[in-house]
Amino acid sequence: MNNSSLNNQLLPVDAIRILGIHKRAGEPLGVTFRVENNDLVIARILHGGMIDRQGLLHVGDIIKEVNGHEVGNNPKELQELLKNISGSVTLKILPSYRDTITPQQSYTSMERHPTHIRQVFVKCHFDYNPFNDNLIPCKEAGLKFSKGEILQIVNREDPNWWQASHVKEGGSAGLIPSQFLEEKRKAFVRRDWDNSGPFCGTISNKKKKKMMYLTTRNAEFDRHEIQIYEEVAKMPPFQRKTLVLIGAQGVGRRSLKNRFIVLNPARFGTTVPFTSRKPREDEKDGQAYKFVSRSEMEADIKAGKYLEHGEYEGNLYGTKIDSILEVVQTGRTCILDVNPQALKVLRTSEFMPYVVFIAAPELETLRAMHKAVVDAGITTKLLTDSDLKKTVDESARIQRAYNHYFDLIIVNDNLDKAFEKLQTAIEKLRMEPQWVPISWVY
Image (cartoon, rainbow, N blue to C red):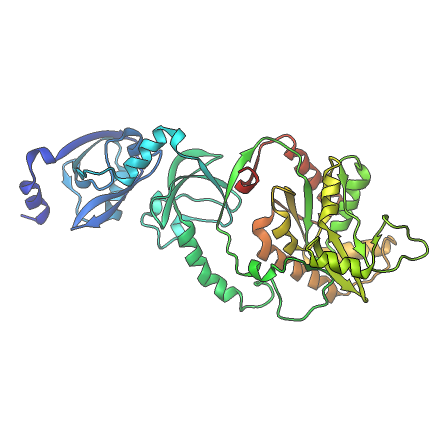
């Protein structure tokens, strides 16, 4: 006689329960198992799954038999067996009989009274496939998702594995790695990235001539930031206060910005940069630049009034934060083409930015585009292949380092098409609900 049969004989008659369920082949029950004292125990019940909806089983229940056959002590084999069975399924279980409410029961009761909890939604900043995850307790119970998708988190009791469901597709919940687990996992990868060259960190070790510097000095902070999930809230359609164009130098951000403003100046505007340079004879204050003294500009920089600033040929240049708000207060969207580090300051409810990354095309395409503008007489500045390659490399570096901030990515391999894509995206903001950072709402 094996141990399982012996255990069954030693159990009180009223302790054993027989449950009957009906399922289709391939339909998951929505449970995971663990081995405890050589028995298979229900480890978790997935929100929205068959077992959760029926409420017949609880975390801690021991599965003894399925359709009259002993289950052994292999969780994977039991998962496969239950997944493939169709029709009537009879389970012999030993209930947990806990005096206290289990975390799963507590959560389920709260779910039935939603006034007690706030729904939690997150935007994912990485791709996940449970079948490629060696740490997940049950691959079949995992939830696959892609970067940028919105998930509803329905259970965070387990420190390593949350339960979540797709907002767009609906369906029952599945397991996803928790923020804590994924941060630990990605920290090891990031450690290698930081030492592998300019494509991986946000700052190259090579000294470069810099035109702009962020006042808040947060580039190093960004460098160590790991983005996993971002809590978001759904808002009705509205016009964003700012449109922020991010990209490498020479990818066409300024051309896109100017086209929007020229075509619709009543709806879009931009800032006028400040400079300590003396005005030339043909320059008027407030047109291309606002001219101030160096001492005044230095005092304002020290007071944190500039979003970004830098020095070029002995003169200071910069964008004042108040100048952005002045455009917004007129009811227009302020279009900015700034350094990516500025997103740390801009991505708040005060500026509510729609952040678009203008990506460089492949080198061959960029070369052809540059030749076309030179031949057309649009520019007289000739760029070498080395210059163009730097643009492509810098574009890849920015995308890798700041991808989690981007609402949209447009590859500018054709300026007219890039403009149309951006215009369509902006119009959607006025017509469709938007998911925004939770801090913008609460």
